[in-house]
Length: 68
Image (cartoon, rainbow, N blue to C red; front, side):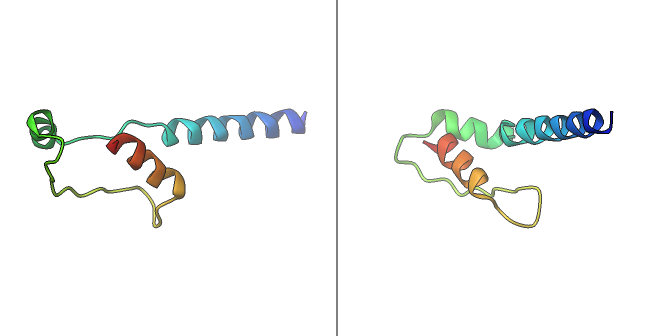
């Protein structure tokens, strides 16, 4: 019985982490408007923020996927 509870708790934690890892970025409406009319070579200054004290490889990969 204890193992079932432990497995259930582990499964729930993994599901939460998976949802957070695949969460879509939140983009400011002003930035979205500028992006919609920007040319491919236009450079924009933006600030990225992340939850936590460090940036993970998964977060860097997500930004690179989104930016390309």
